View (cartoon, rainbow over the protein chains, first blue to last red):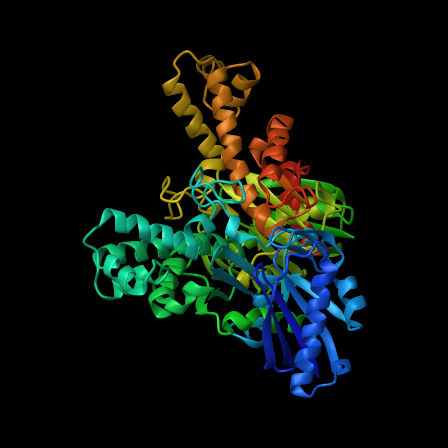
Length: 314
Length: 314
């Protein structure tokens, strides 16, 4: 059986053909055009799935299902996108429309949920019925698996852990609140924190690293810290502490088997994961009597969205 | 069918006989003795259940089940109390021991979870498959119902929303962390905040209220605010804002049908509930596209524990 997984982003749409074991047979990426009508986007997607089929010698009609990951609030039960800021969609009956456009059984879910589902079915949290994927990227995304099922609240309006307030009356977030976790723990926030430290410490080797790499990035402070730079280490420690704060909150509420850390920052590997594992577990209530919560890097990388979307229809 | 519900507290044990509709037929309270051996506590409980049966002319052997609410980490699947600070219990096979002592089928759960279960089965959240009970008392307790089932994480080690960090590096909490929600939103915290405002505002009528009532309480600021006292209103507004912060966090994560507010402070009624409903919903992500989350006062009062515990075995 072959399935199609579609990961719609604000800039690009990633599309792949995926087998029953979660292996990507073929994939590519098309531009997210700013169409007035969402049906044009679906036509682009169907056209591209047909193209991928042709490339691989697969009969389009053998595609057993299409799974769709959408950035926004997606009510999986009704197959409706309630709201997507990035795509400008509101109350879009996406699953029905995609089935009409493709002639193939379809499902849809929020993009972070798709990634969590992919990691659960084929990735880092494969054997874990209770796992939470946290993506540290432009924002902080979350996908929650409880008892082997995706959880995102009534009308799929929950699952937005990035907007937990961890610093009451703190920095203003895009969502309108102040002090949201993503305002401190996203890659965007890390870059901001790095910039602030560079302003404060003109002697830090972070200045050289930025010159070398052409720009400040989420890697800057980690590279500096690894080289023993005090300012870089300060940035990294404080940043990890912010991540840990949100994970402690989620740990005291959900006590999952594991947190799966994805997004660009997760490429830091042990320098990120190891201190997190210590900080988070020591912050959990009655931690000496409870099972540990593991912290694990995501394993599907930026293909988690495609694979997870495809897994929705398996 | 008659069931026994037992709500073990650090000071007293509340015990009741409950019918299938959640009505308490008879109940009383016995002292929580500081026994070395937990089995002595269970003997006290069984003796009291027999006493209640005698009083009502019910045959003890007609009791269809005993439900037990315990303050601490209770793994409902294994029937074990992993840890109870109040009772000094650790790794106690409570369900097995209670069945041996009573000869009756038994179940156990955390006390806050029992209360949430009681409100779901027979109280304020009766028709709501997704509801979170928050008790504002000495601490902040939480009981989470997802899709009609109690949720408390792997090994029942979760469900501790009171220990969400909402003020990073804030006030030190008994749990060892800093800035926990319960440090700001419990009745204990309200009294502390009231005291601070009284020190700051010697002209506030809160001083008269305290003199009249003999002591400062969670009611002091609410009474003053109702009478138009500026300092009292300041305390109440800030306190409600702290409660709202935690509810917004839980709302963005869980998006339940409702939050049920219990504990002593919930007796303030509309003065507490109405502003909370506004603040919480306006803080939820994409709130204009999502169903509202209702805020409702708990309806079973301090009998929720007994009724919920009994409902465990129904």
